[in-house]
Length: 427
Image 1 (cartoon, rainbow, N blue to C red):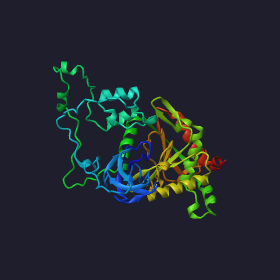
Image 2: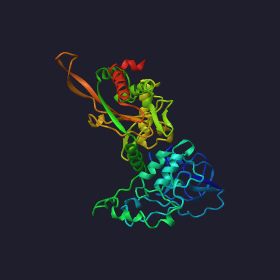
Image 3: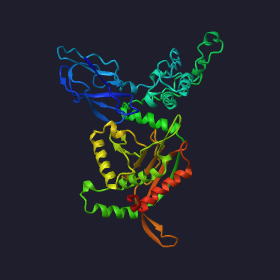
Image 4: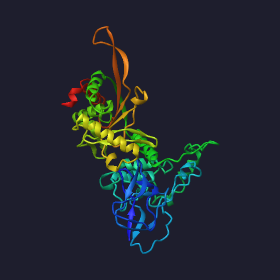
């Protein structure tokens, strides 16, 4: 008998939702054969069996959530086929609709809170866990080898506002009942999440939406964002694109976004601090320039990664972009398509948006927001002559812990230079 477990489909994945079983009890499966469809925090994808055998048990029914590494099914030799066992991890989509009760501020049992026995965690993470009453056994680590770091505990604290803020003083507690702190909580309770209005509909969060909520909320709270906007004259870029695309079939043509991604790749190679990540030990300079491109789906936002965007040709960027966008819309992106991004380009120009600010995607330190190319009157050089120009506004959101305004301004200016003299990024 062999266990089939929930695979880890991304460095930040902690659980998966069983959407549909493709096999049933008694079915024989071969190693590498698709057995179920799962929803991760980013995509819905088919998972394959790690072993060959006959499905003897299904422990995670459709609609249930299972942590990474949790057993979802078992295989046997086919001699017997037991009835499905109720999933040990109950499906929780409906529970999310219940209002968060802040009622009698009865603290959760403190035993084991912050405990670190057998748990890999940094000293800062352990201290934060003790001070905020976080059980490290329930925290997924994002550090090397699954090590829990400060940001992981901070995210757990942000997701559990009812956790005690005052560090438990277990040895002294029995001796100091005279001045308890707990009774103060009911006097000034945290404003409760409003319950659903009569007649309204509650839509449970999908794994993707839940992760967007957690990770971007964490980014907004922890990364000090600053923004720089520049206008780019896209006349030369549009002319070069027109000449390149003239002999090509539609499916082979390059887009404005492809040119922006290529320009970002070239500029990032010159400004490594914008291609970095903030880690507990300091600033991590990433060895590869991997540009994520934001793709809007009906279910949320995904950002497949164009690897080595600095060294790919413009045509290579365009082909890879089309391939990834196609996979995203078909729901066939794999973990290898979504991991390793070091910078993101988010383009809302196709919706007529002229300018916007984007939230940095952790663990990256910057994201470029791209607006629509619009035809506007501008002064020609230093003269008073007014001419029409194709202008695009680009805005960088950057992490002030890693870079500063002057460096980010030079980086955006380099992107502007490359787009206004597009032959330069082809050399």
